[in-house]
Image (tube, rainbow, N blue to C red; front, side, top):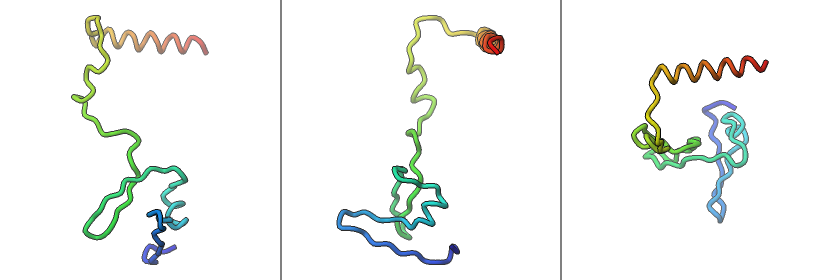
Length: 91
């Protein structure tokens, strides 16, 4: 289908709109795909909805309380290396 070809659809009595299958296939939108709906001066825009709400580090920093002292970078590096060695030793 060429991008200049105009497609039409109809709004149902329940307010539902069927997207043409060519568009759904090209966008890989299957049943259950969540879409954002935005009204624009040109019309209505459908975009894939994000899986998670947008957050900033300040929004989630410290969300898991800890009673122990923070680890140093050296301690974190040592922990990652120890886990990598442990996992490699299993193979």
